[in-house]
Length: 141
Image (tube, rainbow, N blue to C red):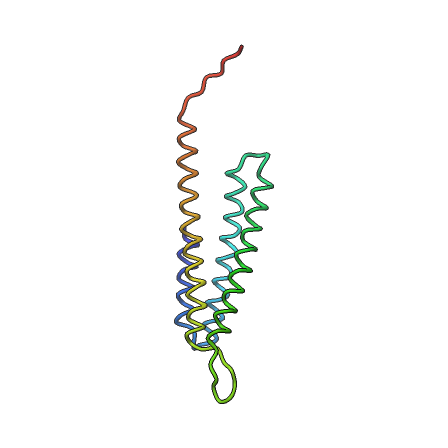
């Protein structure tokens, strides 16, 4: 949970750092570190919650979903930046609307992924506690 809060703070820091390149670079770097830590945590969580014979498949699916999400966000971000370009002194530049939109889309995706991860963990914990509390009786025939 701390990783999600730290990442959200760095994402919001990008809004403040739009006009200051050094601060934007620092916030972007810290956000990348946070994303890497969350990917590793998700990878570990998926592999530990899955049965032993399915851990490889589940871990691979987590990595595929992360890759697909990354590519989709890159295409969406590029489309937002391209569609909001403005002419400044005869040169085409990214507009503030496009930059803020791009950061906003990334923030929304980050928050949605964090909420889904928390819900998944809570659901898995409830299922695990419920199955652990049910007594089982082995009957030999």
